[in-house]
Length: 139
Image 1: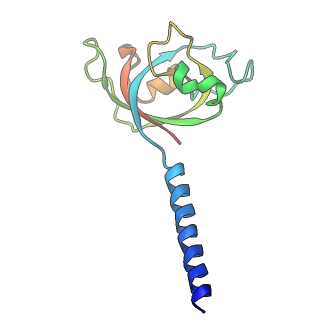
Image 2: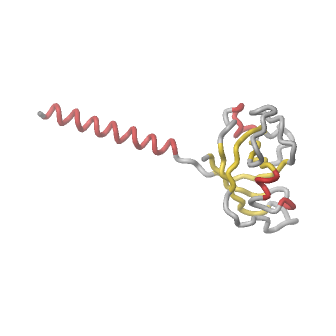
Image 3: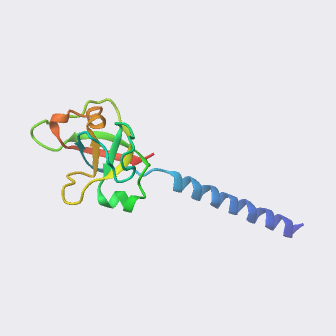
């Protein structure tokens, strides 16, 4: 009887550890960075070539793009503040925008962490600002 109780206890502990590791691995981590925007045409893209993926899309900086592993992932992006004197309060206060990753921001010319499509950027901030401080997370 004691042997069965010990096995049952070990099984419960194992189940608890598995459940906790699943919960921890599925939690998204929020990060901070900057967002810029790019204008149409949005094709070709590094992920989908000439396939049109709509307008709520983005390109990631080299590190986040991870050699293409980020293709098709969705990111939630929230405007936090302006980055320059030109538009001190660019955030529209509409909440976050969710974008699909379709491209890699070209090395050397990437001015931000995430390069949003013009439409995605305009849904959270005044495009006249050109660049904004953001919080973002994979969803």
